[in-house]
Length: 388
Image 1 (cartoon, helix red, strand yellow):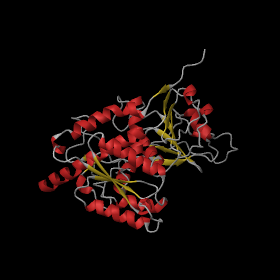
Image 2 (tube, one colour):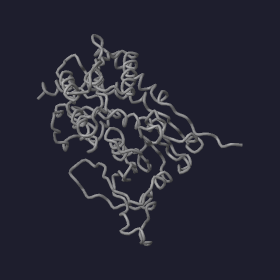
Image 3 (cartoon, helix red, strand yellow):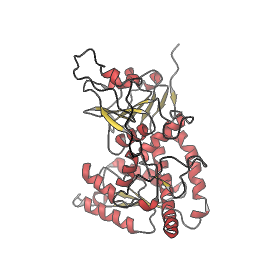
Image 4 (cartoon, helix red, strand yellow):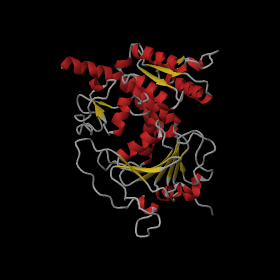
């Protein structure tokens, strides 16, 4: 008799309560006269970007959000790619200045690297549904969860006075005078999936509900992998971030120091160094919000070492050829494939306790949720300005 397969959980199932929340908000008096307007800026001929844009359009229109796709640069018929960056930047600036635009998203990659990062910071934080503006990334990495909307400026304002925890009187609601900071859509979608599955323990204190979990995140990209690792670590998890050339740990505490020599048998080896039970010295006090630190693991540490001790494995490698070797998975591990390429070997459910094959639908839901939150930012900012 063969062993039972792991549970298959789709993003569509996790998406249901969020769609209900979105429909409730869109049906409120705030949007009775005008539906929120989202602009997508497409500057590439890549088929996956256009498919994503079409998927976004359908998902928005199905719940009553106006979606407009603006083609620039290479995406326009007859363009040869010259001046793509200038066209994109102008399109972003125009959307920033357009009062009828409530939010925008740009389909990356365009150039890749620093040029795309620059374009991400050109997007006004009041319209950044993807949460990639430098202020939001600054908040994410420094574990700043609630902000005064008046601090949203081209240069990050001081984060020291901002609260870390929600209002105790109303669940996870933002404290008076603040709004919830915007987070990147895909990392946030993954966190919400993990909350749905039960990786987050609601009995623990807010901001520490992933404590005790060891999570491997494969691919340390600036759009998904790195911010996701920081989010999980800021919620208490020990995150093993695996990239093509290194493995590092994101956590709220330092790892066991790496051995000075791989031949020294008296010091912990790589598996011991990433053990979830390894002792860790306390961090010194700081005036800043407690947030993640990054600790390089020994060069001899392998993906196999990480997989064997991980409660959760998240793969975000944008390649059909890459597959996580399932034979190394911890029995009953939770496996999440971020990209549509399905990054796990075909027998993943024979080993995993829960398998999530993609998160695309949840990413769109988080994008829509961010859009509606941004619509409240301007209202809250006006209230605070008038009260000052």
